[in-house]
Length: 109
Image (cartoon, rainbow, N blue to C red; front, side):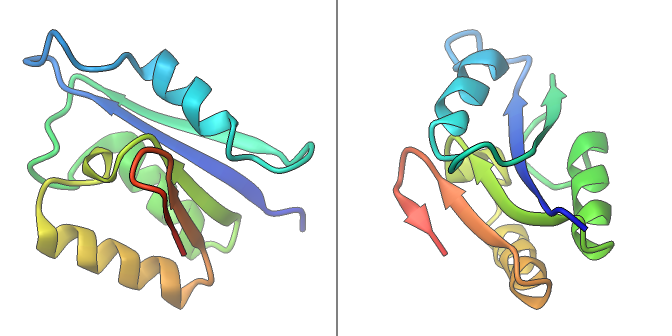
């Protein structure tokens, strides 16, 4: 099976000044090597206070199913603003050998 690069984007409704999901995708695409397959998961209008978001949960299911090789985000807080949630998500990534890249913080596992 050909594993994919997942791009995860999130934009809150209450933040007018936040970067658009389209711009987040463009930043993330710069991290994709070669002609690798990409799937974009977007939660528009969702807060980062927890990980209970439809596209995020779909991405996590795809990770657990072994479909994803790498998750790319614009910034770490697109995943969650909760340190505990973030740590748990990174733990799942590691269990499934999924690399994680944040374009702005240059965080790359």
